[in-house]
Image (cartoon, rainbow, N blue to C red; front, side, top):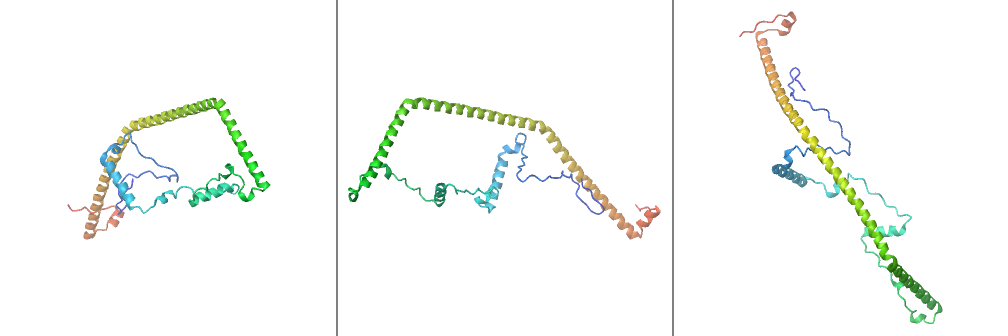
Length: 252
């Protein structure tokens, strides 16, 4: 509580407790949605929306400015992966992807100018053998898939169902925890609503009382100044009389 000293007329109000510096990343939440009725008031909501729109309209910040508080993106180092480096640069430059070369999957005879070249025919024969082996492997895979594919898919579906069941259990558990926190929060806020109301009423009463005390002190100081002026007009020395312990009687 602040009081007036001498000729100073300080305002008498309740002093708030010292504010502790909050942590840089701390978020202070002082909302009490279960006992504050202003949240459901359409007029209050309309006023809040208007203030937000006005602030957004006056703000000169760009959308990119809201990301300045976030840590910078890590720098990617593809020193040991040249293929990824080339693909990363291609995506950054906005270039289209390179078309896949499918020429090795086609079987063609040597051109006319190499029909008599034994090396060209040997390369074509090796390519035909590779393609034939590839088709053989595909047929083997199809045969294995026809024999064991249904059971593999059943096992995979069972794994997916087990994973889905675990995720659903976790969702139910998290929803239960959220509901429990909300119930506990509502319980504490509603129980402390009476205390908060009483404290708010007491605070207002003390503020009014301090204002009344301030007014009374101001009136007393004004009266003291008037008496000093009257004593000076009559030639009385209040300091000397105070030392002697005698004061002249004021005329009524």
